[in-house]
Image 1 (cartoon, helix red, strand yellow):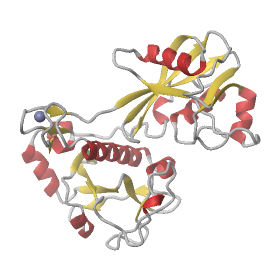
Image 2 (cartoon, rainbow, N blue to C red):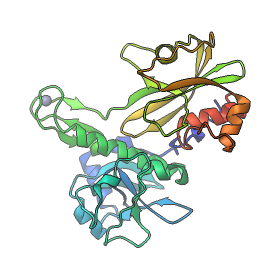
Image 3 (tube, rainbow, N blue to C red):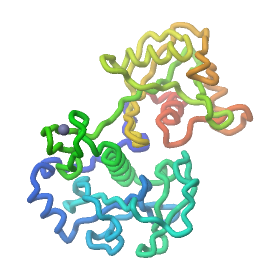
Length: 322
Ligand SMILES: [Zn+2]
């Protein structure tokens, strides 16, 4: 698909400078570089600034707010030759902090630290992702995924001992057994299934009223992408799928997925719903879906902008899957 990499989080060609990760002296030198900049996260929310033209904030390495970020910096790469690190301010507790606002899909709350500029605030990435440049989105997604992995993988999966961050944050190493552990990325297939002029859309239990999207599911060990597409669609909807082709992928750091967008051709149109997996599934024609995206239907809401499902469906409607 020619437009594949224009998806949100589609990548910006960031120079990840992986050759520096195994060189502690080079990493230390990069950290001391006066051009070095830090992106900052708090509980997975990136620090952003600006209004309509939203930007990911880049702080000088000696910014006073970083006193509240005692953890090791992660090395994300280089921009125009300048090192870029990520720091985590999660231990900071804002005043008047309402814990219940966090964790929602579109957490509307924003947090401002007194040591930062007035327009700098921590914002939920899913809420602001479509307003960031590809570079800012790539940096934010990478940092969020890496911090999330470190926060939940502090102990060696082989022997249970506490492990140490290594390689600028791109590994954890176990001092007890010598095991090396790498940040995980979980592959998920998400598929545009078509039958003639219609696409198969479904909704999970608990989704907002009327929201329909492409079917999706985790790839299992020992399974190809194509087999995962056919299995998930059959399990959830009873629809058999013939030819499957890859379209586009999307890093989805909530917390650690790689969405693999595919197109599959249905062999038949009779839906046999699995009520445990799905709340509903239906065939939606191009004309109906055009109305859904135009907001002129009251019974359906389309997949959210920024999600790869939205991207696949929009491109299908525009006849741009090639
Ligand atoms: Zn170990």
